[in-house]
Image (cartoon, rainbow over all chains, first blue to last red; front, side, top):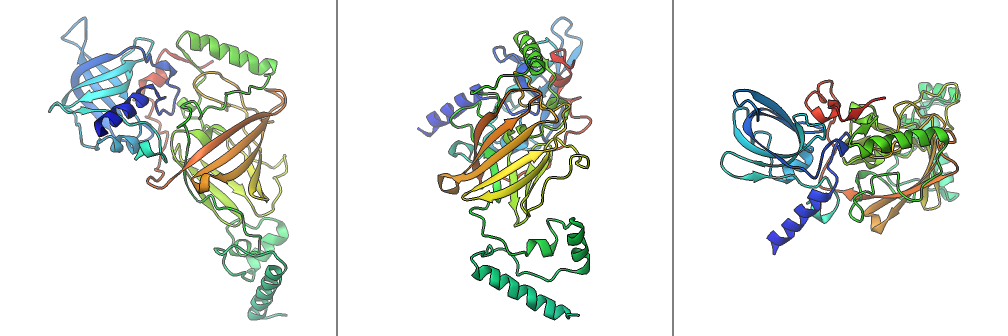
Length: 133
Length: 283
């Protein structure tokens, strides 16, 4: 039952507006891109945590493209099991993002799979309600 | 000339007489203290600080509630509740309508029009109240200090009876100058003195400018047994809409999280590529 409830919470999270200091309208929420690559940098900070991931260019696999991945605030990431050292440069990860509409290598975070197979998500940016515990 | 001890005794007696007259002081207020010479000079000049001991310790009626807490916009009933551009809509002026229409045109193209907050300009009032970060409020007898968990934004509501600063002396800001007054079970806050550039009534969708003539009256109420704070906003800005624009928001009391330092550092947007991508329209 608890698992079912958590799934429901995540469903709400996926349709709720993302926490951002900027407008999220730049992102295409109908599209998902899976980035399989290497962590270049991971910055645990406010107002947003971000990850830069080096991904082989689709047209020329010998070249690397750096994708910027925007996440929510550590306040909410901690509630979803994140730590400041949960990933580090050099880690092989798979990250799913909603990309910017312009086609540039930038996206807002959906999920991340760690080298050990664990999947990390976000939590809704909400406080003061039962679901925010 | 009275000795300091005589002055203190006289002040204490005055406080007692006020309390007897039905003007009781809040339990948390310190006992009235004799003003120092510096405080007396500031009183004479009308510049006594809200945090001066002589101001804090003045006898005042007990306020009906204390907002001291962390608060977070309640979006449990509607994920769009943080927006201000919700019904009932005001009728926009031609200038504001032009900005609105332009923003909607770009929105339909999947672009973001003049997202100044995303470029690290302050959110300003009213939007600063409904950001997706908690807001700490600290109530003293003379003022309420609000610190947003978004960009360390500070807002002060003065409760010590002062009037608004003269218009030719006011320093315009994005949160404006707020003067509050307890009226029955409500706190009524009057705010003017806004910056009129890079200041918007909403984000992520319609662009409606907030100008220097923006005037906001807020009615604060404690509701739901103190679990929620309700604020009814009545906003006018004759340069941008006709009549009164009303909006009521509720905020949840947060007891399991504190605000954090949140700065929009010069390198922030270098790593949030969407804010500098081709999706952004700055003019």
